[in-house]
Each structure stands twice: as C-alpha cells, then as structure tokens.
Image (cartoon, rainbow over all chains, first blue to last red; front, side):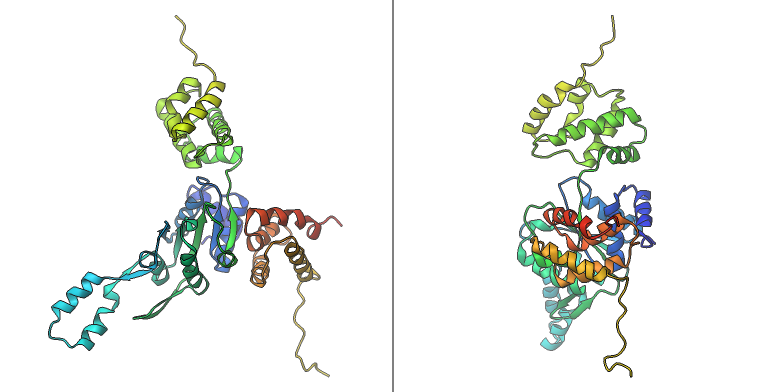
Length: 293
Length: 87
C-alpha cells in the first residue's frame, strides 16, 4: 500500500527509482485518497510520464497508456467494433435470422477495447496514463470529461460500463495549448519543473551509482548550464542519466573539452542546438591534459 | 425546545472554513477561477494532510485551487497573508 501518507508515497516511489519532490509525492498521495485525476504540466523531459510509470511500479498496478496525438478519436481511445470479425460472423451464419445475428455481432467478443475502456473495464485497479493531452482537440477533452467525472463509458449497443475499481489517472501536458477550465476543474494540479542541482545529482547517482560524486556534480552543472541556453530541445533528466552512463562506459575521469565534444550528442540533438552549445558551453571547459613526453 | 431545523452542523476548527472562503474570494478577485468544486476539493484535501505542516497544507490547497503557473504565483502571494501568519 502506498496511500498511507505523503511520506510513504515518496518512500515507495524512491524504492522503484523515482525521486519525487514533496509536492509530487503529496499530489500522488491525494490522488489516491480523493480518487481524482492528476494533471501534470511542465517542460518536456522533467519526468511527467515517468511519474505515472513509477506509480504503477510502486502500487503494483498495471499501467495503461493512452498516447495522445492530433486527430486522436474515440475509436482509437475508447473502443471500436471489430468490423471484419462482424462481417465474418454474418457470412458464417447464413441460416440464422437477422435478429439472431444482430444480437450476436454486438457482443463483447466483437469489441476492440482501446486504452480508456480497458482502464475502466479492468477487474484489477490500474494506473491510467493519458500522455500529452494538449495534443488532442477540445472535442476529445469533452469526451474525457464524462469519463473522468463518472468513471463510466456508455456503449450504445452494450450499455454502460462502469469502473469497478478506482484507477489512478495521470494526465500530462507540455503546455502546447491551454486546456479547458472544465478539464482542469476535475483534476488535481501538479507543476513539475527541472529539479534543483542537489536533487538531480541524487537522481543521476541513483541510476549511475558508479559515477564519482565530483563527476556527477560537474555533469549536472554542465547540463544545467545548457538548459539555461535558448535551445530547441533542452536536455531532459533521462538524458542526464544517459550521459552519466556514457561517461562511465568511456571511462572518463573529468569532463574536459574533448570528452564533452565526443559525448555531447547524448544530451543535445538538434544541429543548431549543438552549434550553440559547443560555442557557449564547450569553450568554458578545460583543455584535456595531454600526457607529457 | 429542540430546534425544528435539527442539530447544528459541526463548525470544524474555529475560523478555518471562513478563512478558506475568504482566501478563495480574494483569489477570485485577482482573476483566479475558483469554483465551488475547487473549494469542496480543497476541504477534502485538507482532511488528508496534517494542518500543522505549512508545506503540506500549502501544497494540498494549491493542487486543488491553483491550476496554472500564473494561478500558483498569485496563490503564493496571498497564502501567507491568510494562513500560518505569526501571531
């Protein structure tokens, strides 16, 4: 159980490799206690999606993920009738009357459950991640409202499907558009930002414990310096961890200019970003020490 | 004689409900959209955290009331004037 107190939630998340700050732990705790969805906003790469995954690991619940994109519709998010299978059934049962077939082809057997229906219909409690909700349109949001307030879905041919267990629902948004008031009203709100130096060091050390403390500090300092530049895509926490692991593989002892230039593609990925970073950060690092003689 | 309206509702800790409503009223004045459902959620959230901890109290309130960064900024500006003020 991880719904005893915010401190317990924090501890449980840490045990599965997610170092939550106090607000994130508290909101995760409240989400379970109050049965309300959480809207997590913040820049890309601060661990919004990861929070949902960690909650799934910490609670032992299955994670059901709905990745949103422009044009996502109910057929891909909720459910769809398996049209081919229905056709086959009609053809196979040539002798049956229409009434029989009609009743038959709108049975659960012919239903394709998409993530939202899966989450509602699941007999075990799940964690439902609705990722990048800001990429969908307002129509889709309106459909979600019904789902998130009543935790039920109406399928005209089958009737109502109501949740028997309360899912933990996490919605993430990168702020590419303002979400509707109505949706926000139903959610608890959590703003996640890049962690401070000390916490990011802790996170990196958790995932790359062999890296020395001094090198971890330098790595995080450089990453933070890079984030301060005006980049197309600032390095995420996951990329800090990737970089740390790369440095370990390279057997690096210090981040000097040469190491940086060799490995910076791990954290900076746009061509224009790479130029800017090399120019503004690369030159601040020391020249590599050449062996004498 | 017993009141025809039944027993009075429990008032809760003295002044907190009124204070919270006043706080929300002032936030509305600043342009933060605080609806009745937010206020009900705020009370429900406060039931779950120790009121003696300023951080828990603040975060529980903020997560139910301030639903954007701008809202949060205004929330923090006003919070200390209403709660946890040194006597």
